[in-house]
Every structure is written in structure tokens, then in C-alpha cells.
Amino acid sequence: MYNTICSAAIYDERDDAEMLLREIKKRAMDIRRMLDFYDPESELGKLNRGHRTGIPKRVSKELCTFIMHLLDFSEKSGGCFDPSVGPAVKLWNIPSQNPHVPKKQEIERVMKQTGTSHISCDEKECTVTFWKPGMQLDAGAAGKGYAVGKAVEYLRSCGVSSAAVNFGGNLFVLGRKPSANGAERPWKIGIQSPWKHYARNLGTLSLEDCGAATSGGYDRFFTEEGKVYHHLIDPRTGYPADNTLDSVTIISQNAFYTDLLSTACFIAGEESAGQICRSVDVNAGYVLVKKDGSVILSENVKGRFQPEERRMTCEKNEEDNTNGNTTDYAME
Image 1: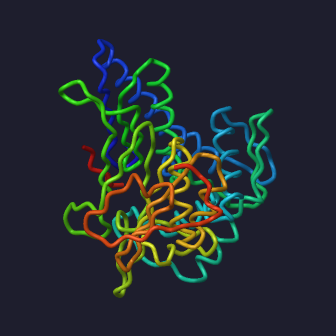
Image 2 (image 1 turned 30 degrees about the horizontal axis):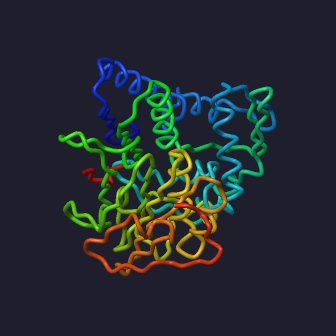
Image 3 (image 1 turned 180 degrees about the vertical axis):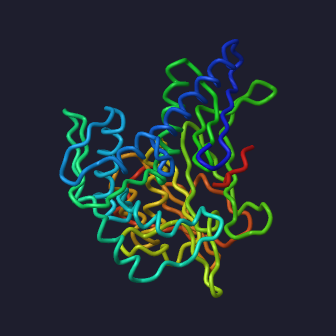
């Protein structure tokens, strides 16, 4: 699902575990049917193709609230995350069999159809209004994290104390992991080294009751005339993000914002990652993997990360007072 592998595991000994897992799958499928950008029959797809410029379009309360959160975070991220980048995403069409670099004029044309300042939501009336023709919303940088968060919320409501939900690299580990002898310990999450031709970890994170999400260009990309073009489009330019980073892993206790932050920080680059993490109150930390092979940790991740193969630096920022679609994680 979501064009990737999704999994959920319950580690409690309980008779209803199979039923709970089936319910998680059902809820995840319902969210996909609501948010699938490439499905014209999803609720988001119907909004994108069925709206009229300047005319409010009624949507479900859940979708309206979801879009409002996206618009709010877009502003907080300084536009490094922008759900209205949909026209540019469709133009590049990197998931297709034969992607190619669009012409400059084509990119300039679709960028005129973007901008969250031209979208409004009325939560009371449950309506969304697009004020520019041709606008389309893309939930690709938030859908899996939203679904993981809903799955974890459901498991908690059912009294589950130990579980792991992993939707294509958007991961949340609930509680601590029990061992065979009955003891409990933090989960160890291995972070994949970018651009390796075989599975290899650059290090591990020790987490409990926490989410992690990784964004990087090495998962979906194509090469044209010797240059790599990946799927993470910078909404400020209309081109794939091009900075010093190979990947960004975000950890926080909010799966939805963990997903959003990983994309926004990758687009923004290393200089702005800390500021964007502090823009939302979710105790976010980060692991930045640079193209030169070095690893930068936010101060609140330093005690949780164990490097394996790359040199590491630790960022110390006096203002940083936060607390600590291939699967990017190996769990132990």
C-alpha cells in the first residue's frame, strides 16, 4: 500500500491481536482512499479534479482538518513543505516507467498553479477553495505519517503497550520491546546508508514510544545525461531539492509531524533543519546525512544514536531547547 511495504506488529500477549491488526489494515486503506494523489476516485483526487476556481468545494471533516494542518505547517516551514506542489509533482511524474526532465517553460507554467496562500479552508463548513486555476494538493509527504499516527492512536485506545507500525519508512514504536526472558528494552532502529547497492546501516537509534521517518532522494529517482533527479520536489523552485544532504531522519512523538518534518528538512537543507524542527511543538530531533559522508545530529538525539560506519558531528545550538518507498529501518 502507498506504493511501498506496510507492516504492523503487536508484541503484547492478547487474544484479540489478530483482530486489532485487521482493523489497522482497514483504517490504513481508508486513509489511502481519502488521500491518494494518483487515484482520481480518492477524496483528494475528486477535490483536485472537481473543484472550480473561487468556488468552495465541500469535503469530509477529516480531510478538511488534514488540509488545514498541511497549510499551517507549510507556513511554519517557510514553504519548504507545500501541499500545493501537486502540479509540479505530476509534471515530473517520477514514479512513471519513463520519467524525463521537463522543459524550463513547463516548470514555470505549473509553478504558476501553486502557492498555499491561494488555498483556503473553512473548518466550520468543511469546504476547500482554490483561488488559482489548475491547483492540486499532494499529500505524499504526510499521508503515511498520518496513517501511522492513526494506527498508533487506535492501538493505545485498545490498551496495547508494545507494538511497531512501519509504513514504508514511516515508523512508530509503541512502548518498549519485550524480550524472551520477559525483560523490556528500547527498540533499536537501524538507519539505512543512502545510495548503497546493498542493505547497510550507517547507525542505530534507541527509541521507545517514539516515531521516526526518513526522507532521501535515493529511493525514487532517475538519471538523465549523467545527473540524478529524485522525487523530492522543492516547492520553491519546481525542481528536485539540491543541497548538501543525502537523507534526513526525524524522530518525534508525533508520527504525522515526523513525516512532514523529514520532507521539509530535506528540502530546506542542513542550515534550516533545526529551525523547522522547533517550529512545531513535537519534541523533534534529527539525523542529517550529508553527501560528503558526515552525519549531523541535533543535540537531543546525541544520546540515542550509535554510529556504525560514517564519521559523525554533533550540532550544539544554544537556541535548540527541544527535547529529544523502501523501508529505511532494520529493527532489533
